Image (tube, rainbow, N blue to C red; front, side, top):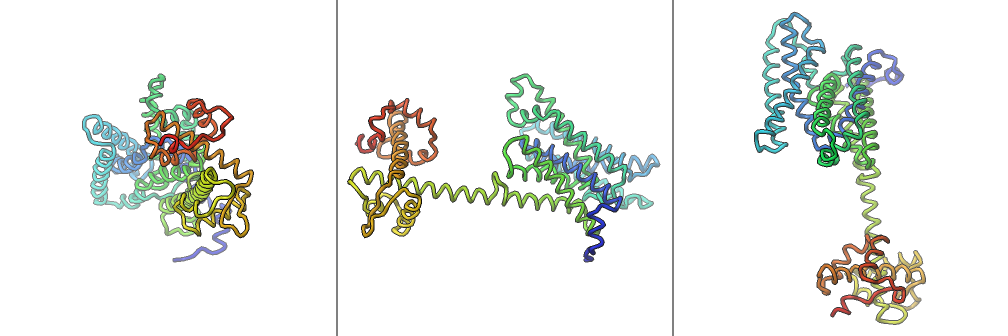
Length: 441
């Protein structure tokens, strides 16, 4: 493999080559549009529709080639191929709708049927095209895997115009598409033309699929409709931010793929674009601030530490109700299923936080003023929930502690106030209710 020189690096990254500028503009415009429309597809749970439409365009491309060849025109020009791909994709949507309408086949099976039948038909037509004299079929296979490096100014203009149109439609109908994705039933009941919006959304997907044939090819166009929005889910929650991040991710994937393709001309541009998108997804999967593996691991560890802290404070408080002064370590070990080393480590951690103190030379612990206040709050919440379960959920007193332990750690102030109202526990004369298990025994 030939490695690029420093001169090649500088020439490519300074965009000195006219072809690089054309390919970069067309590919990035498509990446942004694909990421934007893909966000709606992902939330609509129709991500595989892009894959089906991509495969369904193959027979249309082949038919467009044959029609142009029979008419005496250049059969490899993009216009007849794009027109055939569009009509074929529309036929694919129609076939999918018919299968859903007149059979009990589920959506995933219907998508697989349409995908395989149309693609098989397209392969058969391509085999016939290969037999034509004159070598016209040379290079036609690039439409399957993409050939952005050979994009002409006319091709780039079409891709950019298509991408701009798709993006403008998505922005103009952002509220309507969002409502369709999140709650179609509510949209229909509110008078919105949900069916029309759905057809329009699918039409934009067809448009994006046809526009992406030149960039990443028939087989890989689904990648830019799925991977960027999937990556965006790890960075944000709201529909607006997600669509924006998805568009940026799609554009960045194409940017990286085009630069890599320029550095390594023998490598297919479409595949490099998809690999770039996959790399961004992998980074998002690990480092995403909303749902990334790293942040989830940190949150889990924090939650576990907080859970152990609350369990220990509650155990010390319940033991202190029975004995005055400090609480022996043996009593705490009887309360919690921890080893002695785990108990001592947790006590030391809470002592560092100023919640517990350990009298010297005495194998026991006792509260500080701050620790006692925090423990009272925790025990009160726990026992309020126990009372509620006993009185209103018919949970047996012997089982109520385990049930309450599952929910007490997420009780906020509003829920606690509602429990106080329901249980008539607003009185400040008794800060912590008595243990329901013992009072009900």
